[in-house]
Image 1: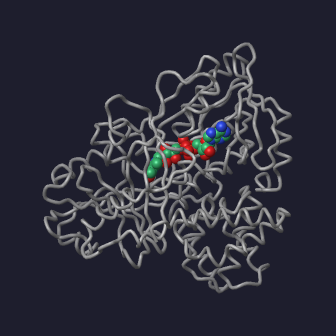
Image 2 (image 1 turned 60 degrees about the horizontal axis):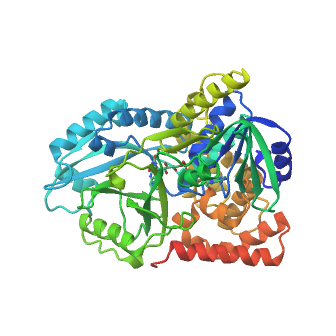
Length: 547
Ligand code: FAD
C-alpha cells in the first residue's frame, strides 16, 4: 500500500493542507482507526492524525483478546456481554487470520471466586447472550479432565473446570490493519502528527493546528467535524478545547509479564483466581507464556508507564499459587508491558468495578469525544460515533452518507471466507518457507500478522543474502517501510512485529542490521542512528527490568 509508504509523508501533508475534510480523527489507536474506516467507507473524506506511532497508546498494551466479556456478568452488564459477544463474531469474520479462536480453561476450586454451579450458570448465560456458535459452546470438565489437559495445575481443592470460547489477536496489528483498510477506503492517516491546537470560527471548531513530530513542521487541517479519540489523553485534548467539564477519564493501569515457554510450559490459555476476588489470564504465545493483568488507579505520567515490582510480584504470586512446582521468580520475566484503560470515572467504584462501556461527549464548540470501551467493541463504537458525525454534517451542510457497512468489509490481510481458508493458506506458506529454508515455525506468526500480505514479504526475501532468519526480518522491515509507515525502529520492533514482547532475545543481533537498513532508507546521519540505538536499548531495558 504505497499510500502508507514511509516516504509518502510530504505528499500526504500536502493533501491534508489542501482540502476541506468531512472529518478529522485525533488518535490512531483502535478507536480512532475504527472511526476512520467507518467514516471513509460511508463516503466521507477523512483525515486521521496520531501524535506518535499507530497503536502506540493502549492499543498495543492490552491482553490481546477479543472477548465476549464473561467477567462483565459479575457486574450484571448483560447488554455489554451481548454486544461484545456479537462483535467478536463479526471481527473474527472480517479478519479470521488475525482474530483466532482460542479455548480458555477456567478451573474452579473449593472456596474460589466462582463455584462449579455458578460457573456453569454464568457460562450458559454467556453463551446465550453472546450467541456463541455450536462448536464454541462451553464444556464442563471433570477434575481428572482438567489435570489431563493441564498437568501443571494445582490439584488441591480442584473441583473441575470449564472450557469456553475466546479469540486471541494482536492489538497493534489489528489497529494497523484497520488503518490500512481505512486508507484503502480513501482516508488519509498519518502517524507522528500531533493535534496541538483547535481552530475556531464563531465559537465552533473548524480545524486543528498540527505538528509533524518528525520534522517539527506546523500545518493546519480543516474539517466539518472533529472527533477526539485520544484514549488516555482525551481529557488533555478536551482541555485545549476548553471543554473539560462533567465526566472525566479515570486511567486504570494494567500490566503483563512474559515468561519463556520453557520455564512456564502452559498448554492452554487459562483464566484463574488471584485470591482477592480478581482473575487473571495466562496465555501461551510463540515461545513464551504471558500473564496479566492488573487493574489499579493511575495518576502518574501518561507518557511513561512501566510495570512496578509490586505489580509484577502480584502476577508471579498468583501464578505460583495456581500452578504446581512452578516457583516463578521476578528474574524469570523476560519481557513486559503496561497500559492504561481510559475508563470513565464513576463515584465510589474501584477500577475493576467500573464499567468498560464507552461514552460520547459533545462540547459546545462541536468537538465529539469518545472514551472508555474495549478493543473488542471498536467497530460498534465507531458506528455510534460516525452516526453522530453524519447527523451533525447533515444538519450543517445538508450532506448525507450511507449506513455503516464495516461488518462486511474484510480487513486488508484478507479476504478469507472462513478460518479453514486461513489454515489452507498457512499450508501454502509453510511449503514456501521450507523451500526458502526458513524455520516453518514462522508460518503462524506471518499469516496472523500479515494475512495474505505474507506473499509480498516473501517476494522480498531473496534480495537479502543473509541467514534465512535475518533475511526474513529484513524482508519484513522492507514491507513495513513501504506499506505501514514505519518511521522509527521502535515502530517495527514493538507495534509491527511484537518482537520486544514475544521474541526479545532475538533483538540484540538484529539491532545494527535494522539501523543500517533504516539509515539507508531514510538517509539518516550517524547521530540519528546513535539516538535510535539508545532508544531501542532503553526500551529493552524497561521491558526486561527484572531479568
Ligand atoms: P489508545 O490506543 O490509547 O489510542 C489513543 C491514541 O491517541 C494514542 O495512540 C495517542 O498517541 C493518540 N493521541 C493522544 N493525543 C493526541 C493528539 N493530541 N494528537 C494526535 N494523537 C493523539 N480490550 C479488549 O477488548 N480485550 C482485551 O484483552 C483488553 N485487555 C486490556 C488490558 C489492559 C491492561 C488494558 C490497559 C486495556 C485492555 N483492553 C482490552 C482495552 C483496550 O485495550 C482499550 O480499550 C483500547 O485499546 C483503547 O483504544 P483507544 O484507541 O481508545 O486508545
